[in-house]
Length: 336
Ligand SMILES: *[C@@H]1O[C@H](CO)[C@@H](O)[C@H](O)[C@H]1NC(C)=O
Ligand SMILES: *[C@@H]1O[C@H](CO)[C@@H](O)[C@H](O)[C@H]1NC(C)=O
Image 1 (cartoon, rainbow, N blue to C red):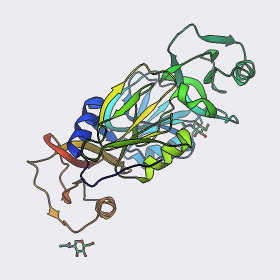
Image 2 (image 1 turned 45 degrees about the horizontal axis):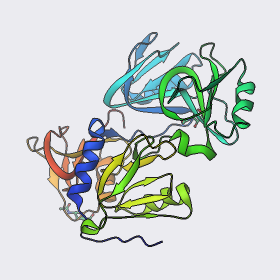
Image 3 (image 1 turned 180 degrees about the horizontal axis):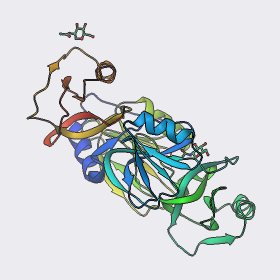
Image 4 (image 1 turned 135 degrees about the vertical axis):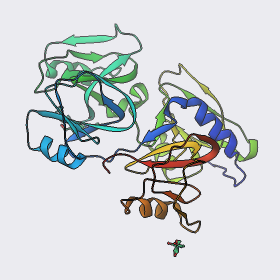
């Protein structure tokens, strides 16, 4: 298969589409991972049992790690003992929840997660984790199953018999997605917006846009997109998109499309796509730095609170509210 790429690819088209498709995700935080925890980016505690506030994230993290009654901490230096009942959206906040789901072969475990089904009646309800796992193993149309975590008394046991349309936060519940049936579960992928059960149409030859289907299917498409900076999306049917996408077709059950985030994730920072800060004075600019060095230059300097693609660095926290298509502004998240 031949993937045509061109230096004249229509940046504007891509970015406009990405912004339109993911407008509620225009600011996205790359929360660094922590062993033993599952991270919920851009979320904060809603309803919880008591919250304790520490002076720093590291103080909260070490206190939580050494206390079995602690179930979660966040980068604002807060810990929760007991239960986190709800999470609500909050840009720049990373919630770390202790993993409660035993690892199971041929499945990926999502902690504190339950699944939304296309058809809510498509379930086999069971009374043990083993029973629903067996039901899912033996059903070729079962993309996943859900059980309460070992240390939890809440939650229900069920195996899906059809399409999964999303995961949602549910304290104490574990969702296991079958690794071999990803086109029916659309698992989350780091650095991409998950367009659950969607097909992407290429802008077809327009200004260097193209799409190609790889024989290696989903796995090969994911890899090809990851290594190609001009890739804008890939799908579980093996398609890779270069340049503009003209249309996203929804309700395509059995195909998941992942749109690459317009700003590459930089761990510890919130990326604002298509926005800059035109008012806060920056401390310096070094146009000769490459992107990776720009990130490192800021990360390694505790006084640096943000940077952008023009290689400007801020020591006062930037507030990216001025639209500027094609740029990315990165704001350091608390605690990192
Ligand atoms: C869920 O927690 C387990 C540890 O109990 C961990 O191995 C796994 O990576 C976590 N899952 C995610 C998606 O972070
Ligand atoms: C800009 O960055 C380059 C590459 O790291 C470095 O050699 C140069 O000294 C920097 N210039 C200024 C003015 O800091």
